[in-house]
Length: 233
Image (cartoon, rainbow, N blue to C red; front, side, top):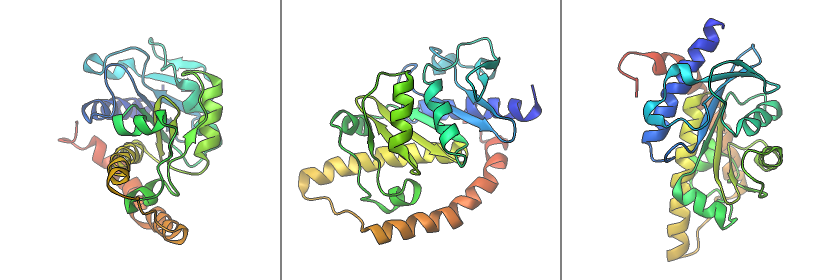
């Protein structure tokens, strides 16, 4: 296995612990992956292993055709979803699938999250759509998610949960956090009044500014931050 793949195994492991302690998932649910640049390889979390006992060696390395290249565990049952997104989105290098409560509630209601907050517009774009229902772990779910996702940063899976994508694990994690916060705000705002949606021109300007400035710095600094002593969360 290449040095790069080993590095990404460690990064996926560390981020899986952060995801588990963030409240975005429970039990063994949820999964994440990272694409290894220039190697057509994907590192993904294993299936059915509790986060409390997860180890770096449990990470599974696959090729873009879904064949296991390294790892003794079975890959996440949602590996088809991850691979389909990578094939459709050359700009995406990390995929995170969570089951956060408020976003999942909207997914059950089949209610998309409109661009109501600036940070949602910046990281996701023109809101979070809901993909057509398909059973977990199937090709149908992968196709439905890719179609609904388009060029956005996140999508809700009907009666299921959330998928957030990014140019690295840190960005995908941030997207999932912002989607959950936005879902909570949207639910509460809908209870007290009519949620005001940001106009399309403002959404486009916010998204463009984010992609061209703030997020570029985060992408450049990511590797050093996640591997720096004292940041093993």
